[in-house]
Figure 1 (tube, helix red, strand yellow):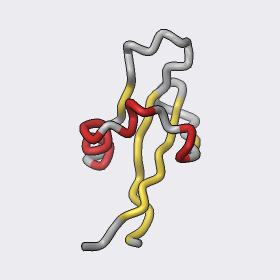
Figure 2 (cartoon, rainbow, N blue to C red; figure 1 turned 120 degrees about the vertical axis):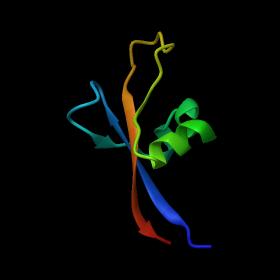
Figure 3 (cartoon, one colour; figure 1 turned 60 degrees about the vertical axis):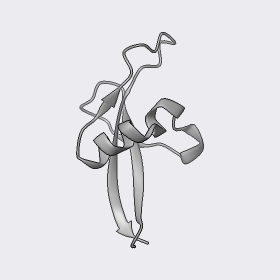
Length: 66
């Protein structure tokens, strides 16, 4: 089965600018299998329960078959 490389992007407002997030900096809730499935389907994820003041939108792009 081919594997794909997913790059996670972050945006403070869900519009611009989208910046790639290093794997070690991706929050655990973004890596949840339900959120990953939504991002693969083209949706964005946002954690409204994050009270740290660092809330952001996340999305994923498939870049290549590995």
